Image (tube, rainbow, N blue to C red):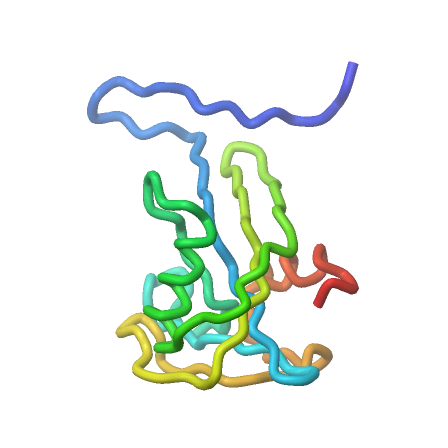
Length: 146
């Protein structure tokens, strides 16, 4: 018998919130040479003052590729090009994450989302200390794909 944990989503009575939740997200890997584009977030609160990969939850019914195009436009003000799915990652127990990771090209940045303070390119080996650990885990799981 496998010791792997299985995430399960249990319907809840009206007005109750389950301990178990699922997040389905799209992440953008935007490179410029040996550097990665990160966004310094203002909101939501749990990401405030943290650097993240451009990413967000996928809207209900939204295809992950359409989501990453929306996310790149909204967060970094750029028209995404050469969008390519490079990985799908899944992890968690009661909080289960399913992450679609895309490599995306852009020509430059534009008007940032109100949730983003600034965007900046960082060398892969010199990411800022305020880089979110869960986003770093996404990068580590990509290994040589980045």
